[in-house]
Amino acid sequence: MAVALKAGAKLKSAVCDTQLMVVKAPAGEYDIRCGGVDMLAGTATAPEGAQLDPAQAGGTLIGKRYVDAEEKVELLCTKGGKGSVVLNGVAMEIKQAKQLPSSD
Amino acid sequence: MPADAQDSSESTAAAYAARLLRSLGLIPSPTLYAPREHPAMAWAASGLMELTGLSDGPPQMCPVPLAACADGALAALASLAPEGSFDGLSGARLLGERAAIMDLHRAGAVSPGGACRLYRAGDGWIALNLARDEDRQVLPAWLQLEDALAPDALPQMIAARRSHELVEQGRLLGLAVAADDAPGPKPKGWFALGVEGKPRQSSKRRALRVVDLSSLWAGPLCSHLLQRLGAEVIKVESPARPDGARAGHPGFFDLLNAGKKCVAVDPRDESGRRQLRALIAGADIVIEGSRPRGLRQLGIDAEVLVRDTPGLTWIAISGHGRGEPQENWVAYGDDAGVAAGLSHLMYRATGHHLICGDAIADPLAGLHAALAAWVSHINGGGRLLSLALSGVVAHCIAFDLPGSEGALRERQQQWTALAHESGVSKPRTRPPSGHASALGADTSAVLAGLGIAC
Image 1 (cartoon, rainbow over the protein chains, first blue to last red):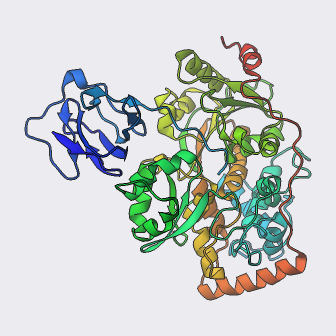
Image 2: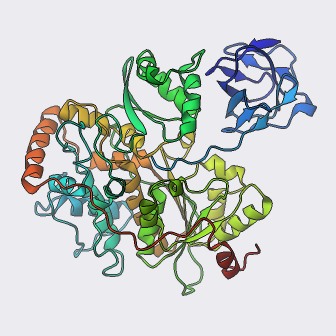
Image 3: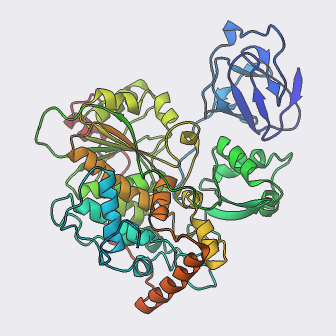
């Protein structure tokens, strides 16, 4: 199911604990899955019988940023889980951690 | 004077030193020496008065004795140290050293360093610290905007939103954001004791070894103070993410880091993680300012290490303390001061929305952390002690907070007059003791010395 990804919107996995927040995404429709199943926006609930696909169980880590190959789409993991995050059929990758500031 | 300072001749700094020592289970020495300056004069002499206020207005008093608390923290440490260890050092003046080196000035609702700013939200004020350029990239997600954010639209966007929603969403996104609220209920203490391990077994005579994984100001100041107590400090950095302060003012980096051995280990590969674990295993004191989940993701679990390494003291410095959810919140020195209630107090005392001091939570936390580390170490170690930037400031505020609005304003007037009588100093700094080593300059020497394979 294709969905729009709005900056600041929250997504949750239908089959594990993963929660993501959209940091950035160009306008458009996206197919975003976690654990092989469409992710849920807002207060949507999981379809009955949805199960984690064992082939899509790489896991997510809290605090990591997940990006597509061009780093156009960036999602922040706000809760880790067992599923892998897949955007338009391609697994998302962890972005290199931010540099530390020079002063605060 | 606070209620527990029974001797009316005792200075505020001495009373605060005694409070800190008692909270660590120690009896203050009758010969404890602390500066006897009035807290208003300590503030004026620290340089922070000059750094607080509107840029086109007068320097402002702080109605709680923060500079005297800094003097008290150093006095408490000095009372447990070999005589003369801290000669020539003033706790209060440490607070203004960065501003002196970088030539920073008061800028009202903006921090002297320029990154942190108070904004009016729909239902109150907040502080936002954009310390990294990359933080700007998450602003559209923070404000849930469809389009890019025009550079000058930020105040207007924030004003249209509710403060608690901005703080909550910002913290999820890793922004250093805080509500500009009144000080909370009196904090229970200024540190939290996590797990306790076993004390040191042998009494091997060798120099105190500190492994410092921290960056910026609070943690490096803590290990810098331990150097004065004879510690060998090994500053450990990741080559991919070195201490950000290396890219800041070199004079300030030298001031805090000269004389430390600089080791680079890459935690992204297994040999780097093994070296890091070996460095920690050889330490008496570890200082770090990382979020616990970041270290756990590298296979470094402070709780487990303290439990398994007899005598190890682990000093964890965070923005808002350990435990969920606050251990995941990012904070820096200026916004942590706001979170503790400092800007709210300044508003009630002056009528202006002001950032108080320069990243004030950083040097205050560094001073307190050095005391916690030293006390734990001389008592055999085996402790995880956690200090929060905001928690240390909250503790200093609560030490001597006027009980009513009337008392607050009256004190502000009296203390301001006293400060002007004694003279308001510009921030001052000591010269650095030398140049800090380059990133990783001592890696092979230190690893070889500890028998760790490169």
